[in-house]
Image 1 (tube, rainbow, N blue to C red):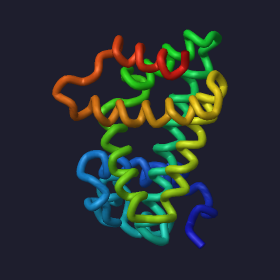
Image 2: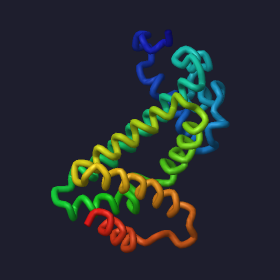
Image 3: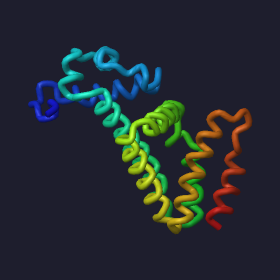
Amino acid sequence: MTGSSRGPNDPGRRDRIIDAALELVAERGVVSVTYRSVAQAAAVPLGSVTYYFDSLQQLLCEAFTRLAESESSRYGALLERARTPQEAREAVVEIICGQQVGNERELLLSYELYAFAARNPELRSVMRSWMQASRAALSRHFDTRTARALDALIEGLIIHNSVDEEPTSREDIAVVVEAITG
């Protein structure tokens, strides 16, 4: 059993370790994450990392779960505020184009999560949960088939726009969202 049942000697330590792991992944990639690098980044003794996490795999799974839950929450909040079909379409465009959801750090973390999940079956459940949460948020406003298509559109356009020399404009994205949802 891990030390998660330990008393509150340093109640924020476990969270700092997870946050440090995410920062390392964002800065240098999953391959850079070691017990030692996380301990240094979190400013905790090396033994604390191994105390709370039996393996680096467990630490990374929990870190990526935190990322997915955080992103899903922000994504869902934009759709939750929509009261009309037009506001829902505008929320989808904002998810793709805005800074509230897809800043560069989160995008890099998402790339790392995709690659890591492709090689680690136990992490695929984190990806599936994230996709289900995204589709559930979209399903408040759109039928299941449309929500699924929008989810793929959102992911694809965010990725493409992050590397394209001429990213798809907000206006063009709004036209595509309208076409899919109209």
